[in-house]
Image (cartoon, rainbow, N blue to C red; front, side):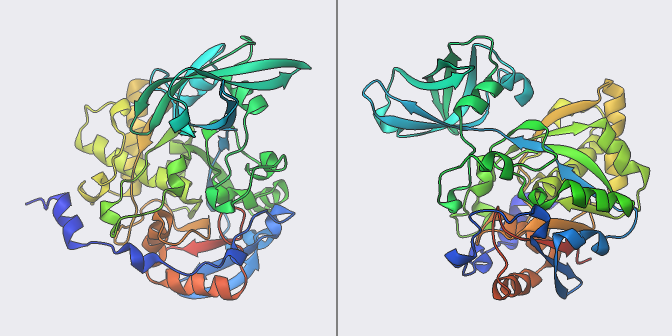
Length: 416
């Protein structure tokens, strides 16, 4: 008899207040340290904790391990428009419209594009067109925005601009601002265009940085390669929902945000090449992608006729699917489906919630920053280290670690 997922949720409710802690404002990093790899690194392994720095990371990883990194790139998603009456409003580009197959196609649109957005000051913008002027090659151009439709996520906005040769990605770069997390409580600056990107960022689409990777430098990457520690890339476009606070009493009542992931055949082949290899997820986004891949593989094993385009993962599916398959079996199922459909990559969405009681299957360790109180990311950390998360955070606070996106980080080995 299969126990319904909703029954499990009711029997194992996670009180979000158990994941609260006092985070003094003085511990929130408003700017990064220089160089990036001089950030402090807390190392946790089977209950033991030590203090170090990122530039010593190779000393804490076994030879021939694999770092899995998220190569998504933060887009300049904040646009400040002027209304005909002279007032200001902000349009925050969240994700591409469903009329485009993927974010890359949406970013490459010329002359006009449709996007799903949040709008600040929308009460005073009932209709009409708003304008934003920007400079390109010494000439002033104008970006226009019109409301198309109100939806659950915000608004569908139609953009068009005067220089039809520019694509939307270029428009954002010229006219937009980097969307810093709200808890930094400051406007973005020119330096954030570099500082709030990983050195390996490639794929436009995130509205928040995969911040664990901000600590990695070219020099550190070289030192890792010298120890025969390799990297593999995946793509999860981080959405604004990653900052969404849990306002419900329990984690089970929280509506988890969904995010786009891009999976390439090359990644699957690397994961299968050495099944016993030590794997380290660089950031919660990499972990969420890998765990989602596992469950997508399980779905393909259970339903051999399922197509890749239909294997997106909802919030609670992982808790009701069969649990007996190995990570290798699941990834092999995804690769087999790739080969059946003769594709080398696919785009899908995941809303997976990793919370206390969830068993990590994809990696042995995670590199991650220190997260907000009562956040879904802190629930994920519990899946790694159990109640030791409290000891880790207490020690980090006592030792003046810098918290959140521009802060220091940790290497957490899985409590098995």
